[in-house]
Amino acid sequence: MSKKQSIAFVGVGRMGANMARRLHDCGFTVASVFDVNREAAASLAAELGSQALESLADVTASADVIFTVVTNDDAMRAIFFGSGDNLLTAASDKIFINCATLSPGIHREVFTAAEKAGAHSLEACMASSISHAREGKLYLMLAGDESIYNQVLPLVEQISVNRRFIGGPGRAAEVKALVNMVMNINTAGLAEGLGLAQALGHDLDMIREVFSQTGANSRVLETDSADMVAREHDCWFSADHAAKDSGIASGLAAEQGLHLPLNAATEAQYQKMVALGLGGLDKSGIAELTFKGRHA
Image (tube, rainbow, N blue to C red; front, top):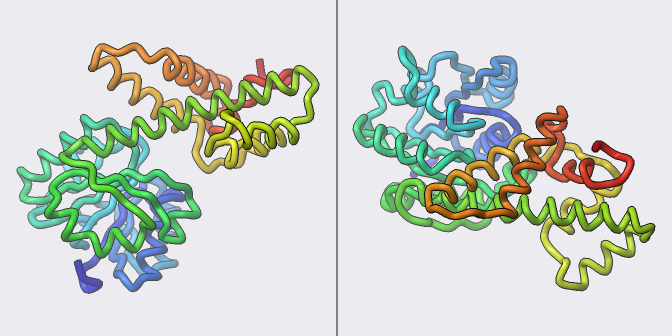
């Protein structure tokens, strides 16, 4: 993969837009962008000197490598299998790098369809934040054809500080579902611990310090606990997405005949946030359900 090859982005929300900015800064040509939010696409295109296209087929025609960063399985089906206009139109030899957290099943569907179209599909599941996308410090879990992974590795290295090739199609999505399942469970558990500590009248700065030195320590203690206490839930990873991702894990567990009660309880909490109109808050907003005097 050389810098002479062009890139396109489908889905330019905060993650996709910052990945595009990063690759532009690294000297790659971002030929086009596409988003259902036409205004966001036009603004980014003007910033990067690229085109904001309104046809998915035109996006494919414009670039050698097309990144997709969409919200859910339905959005993924729409861009790859939509009648009349989709990314697989005249897609021979194109490489699609699909970065959203989706079900393993849809990644496998896209992989197979891309092969039939003479194209290639690679999963590149992200486990990092918006700032990491801008700085090229994502952690990526990748899956698909390893030879295609090796082909685009010079490009992928520019957006990630570390990465792991997992295996065949769908396998990275499975691992990403596990990552987010455990992260969401940890977040819900931390919210309950801090909520109970508050109800008991403890100083929460002291509780957070004690947690950090004991078995209660976790990555989410570092990233989310201060926000839970201060009720500052600016969105880095939304409750909507947490509900979706815990649901993906639930689906995988059901396929294997497993009951995962902690994941089920966590998914229910995030679904409750969505039902209360709190889905746009950061996942730390789950504390709104556990602290006395906040949402019931």
